[in-house]
Amino acid sequence: MVRHYRIAGIGIQVSVPDDWMYRDERELAPFVHEPVTADWELDVRTTEELPEPEGELIFRESGKRIYYHQDQEIRYIGSVEQGWQNAYLWACCRENRVQTLVRQDELRDVITPKVVMNALCAEHMIAKHEGFLLHASYILHNGRAILFTAPSGTGKSTQADLWCRLRGAELINGDRAAVRVGENEINAWGIPFSGSSGVGKNAVAPLGAIVYLSQAPVTTISRLKGFRAFRQVWEGCCVNAWNRADLEKCTQTVTTAVSKVPVFHLACTPDESAVVALEEALKKQR
Image (tube, rainbow, N blue to C red):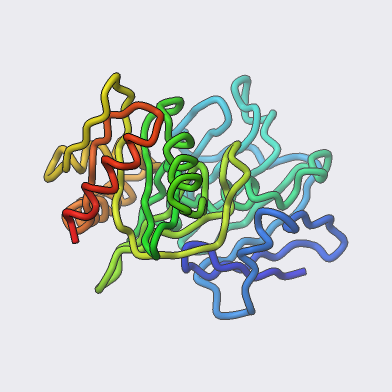
């Protein structure tokens, strides 16, 4: 079975055995695309046991271990705190091809957006296509994208909801967005992974602004430029810190983006005053 998707404008071919349960009916379904020459190929198979690690351990966190071996990045995804044996997914990435093995006892979870995005290493894929993945609530208003970024719990969802309720904006993704820099414009793209928000639409729009949020007793807004703009956007970027090429690529891409797109710091209360402040700031940029 072969499925084709287009995520952030990138063509992806996913191959799985014909007899597999294939769960793309919800989050992945809006990204289904007619067969085209794929930019990335993902081949997924089952196994009773995952291969033992080879090469150098270059990254380690609670749900992920990454090894580098013979120009290949090898990922173990799952509950790997006590060792790679507890992973449910093994993914070997070389250039634009990803071979993936999933333990048979985990078949009930196969081909969810989380599996696809983890296996593809979405942040790496988007970085290679002049883009970056940003933790942000993405709304569409008057044909332009606005991205609210901030540390968790600061109010990204609240501000997005205010714009949707009070100004008729559309929520595209409640948790993440892809930003890609083109020759003539910078676009924000919806992606199929949306965290707990459950909203992940397939949409693309010119990026109108990136808004860094903080909580405050009184609402104020200021335009950020130069390094200050870069720093606040970089804080929300999903970047492979172990991959020097990705770091350099994303640094360049974010620098270009913040030099061309307004970046604001909105220190605010969770009410309409925040909407009005950003609205007025955006008008001054036209």
